[in-house]
Amino acid sequence: MFGTWPAQDAKDWEVVRFGLERIKNVNSTLKTINYSLGWIQPLAFVSYKAYGEAAEVYIGSSPSSKYWLTGKYISIFTFFCLLISA
Image 1 (tube, helix red, strand yellow):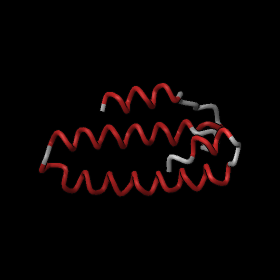
Image 2: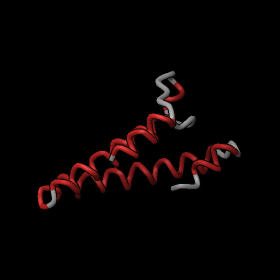
Image 3: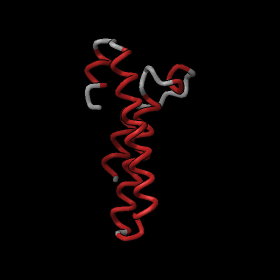
């Protein structure tokens, strides 16, 4: 998943798309588990919720993402701010 950054620099869009699909799948699983069992530990629920939102921002800010291509670009800076605040 973290190979998407160097792949973006190398303009290897096939690897970027593959990595983004993996991130989407993992994020979906994370949300399912978090919303199913997150009530057990409320602080962990909040942290994982923020992490999931940050992952969505990362997916949306990728050059191969449909959001980036339509001009709805969200900066990597925003992603890191969300990640740090988690």
